[in-house]
Length: 104
Image 1 (cartoon, helix red, strand yellow):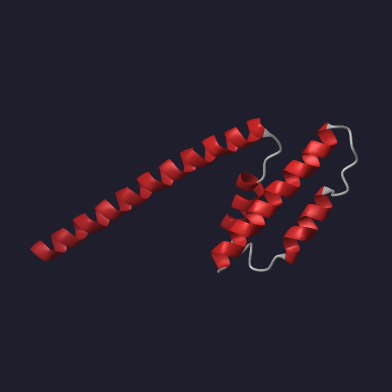
Image 2: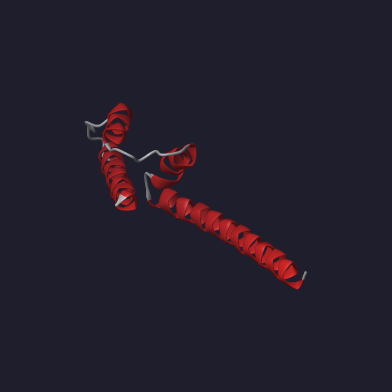
């Protein structure tokens, strides 16, 4: 349930940011300020459990246009690949240690 709430919050945040940027690019007044976005994020419970979650939410969730979305996707792909490699390496090392312990 906690993950679902984070996903919903991230989606809401993306839509609000895009709508606001769209209105500003058309020269219209956008009622939501960055302070409103921050206050909105503070009303959603259990979103920022850790500093890592805060970094993800503030740096990897929102985008203002298609180019920024594409850039974020590239950054996310690079991060996922790096984390996957690290995870696979850790699993292999753990397996190797277990094999050595069994042989002893």
